[in-house]
Length: 433
Ligand code: EPZ
Image 1 (tube, rainbow, N blue to C red):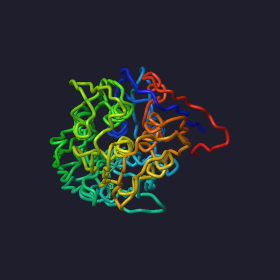
Image 2 (cartoon, rainbow, N blue to C red; image 1 turned 45 degrees about the vertical axis):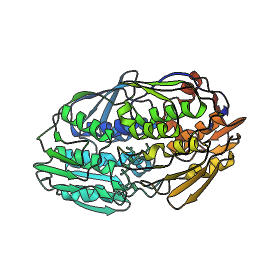
Image 3 (tube, protein in one colour; image 1 turned 135 degrees about the vertical axis):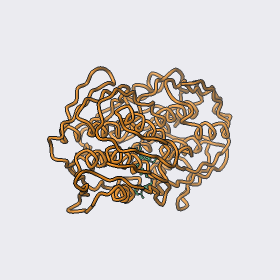
Image 4 (tube, rainbow, N blue to C red; image 1 turned 180 degrees about the horizontal axis):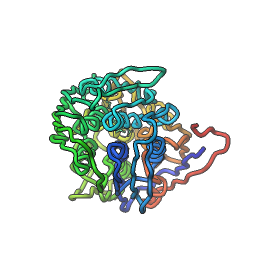
């Protein structure tokens, strides 16, 4: 299995280009199930999660042609059984979002109940309630969620997509895809407003769907007879861009993140401003200004919330930045209350953080010292790499397969920014099945 070996202490500087958004391309790939015509996608990030989704779609009858760097064409015949197996669904929760397209296009779906992961239980009750609101009958059997549409297709209806933690991003997208081919009109209320919902809606409308209001809490969908092929460019990954911006901020370097959408990162930019990080921005770039690390940042509290609030996917990265601030910060996690696996690893580097239920109290220290640490989930792993960049001495980050799920060649791109980081294979440590 691979590890990262990082020598900390040098400020990053230079320019990095943002890749396509993982959390947008995955549901958009699933949307290819809604038509038998080809869907041509650009700005597709080269990630293991993308490869996992493509394997699932190929099992569901898709043919994939890689048409260039970060570009592919996918075309699905409804030949194969509409069944997504546990072996693949368990590896990636987003694969549950093939459910809506299968139900909408084929009138039936059978998808393994996705397991939990290190950030929480991850239920799908809002998805199920949404499909029932559209007129499907749903049952669970032997670990699978099975749905049938009435003869003639889903009638459509009003789906309420709230959960105890706010709107569900996945349920909004899943139900929107099923509603696109329903016989009648559907209204999605308390819908998620994330840019990755809007990007999917834009792609579906390019395919002939009639979706209005994506990006707002109420989305209206006029069902259509059929969808056709389209060409779509995936939006930039706001979480990857935010991670590189924090990398510049934490090392005190001048890092310019290009090809991003600053308007998707207003909560992070506000928190950086409050903490004293110098930021310049343009229409599609963000640049951190050089900082003497002896001038420590102001402690700055954040609470994670649905978009446009502070993204839960940047919470771990923010914790690393505040671990070196000049005072005490409180980080409150409202989306995934157990999303603190990175906390124990940061303590190993000398951070002073204590958990208080859904909050973490971070008492800033002057320096962190390198050690061997363990990645647990995708975003926490990226935060541990950031910590290694700023820790004195050498840090080894283990289980970096978590990072490869959501960050394209991160060690190469950080090296291009001046980081001392290399990937090493460590025989004996097990790679995930
Ligand atoms: C998406 O996950 C993202 N994944 C996550 O990013 C992101 O953290 C999350 O949205 C929140 O922004 C993808 O887009 C592939 P939710 P999703 O449904 O759709 C609860 C990453 O690292 N809930 O909005 O699964 C749930 O437990 C990943 O890139 C229910 O209770 O998130 C959570 O507490 C991690 N019932 C909250 O809602 C449901 O039916 C938000 O979940 C569904 C969700």
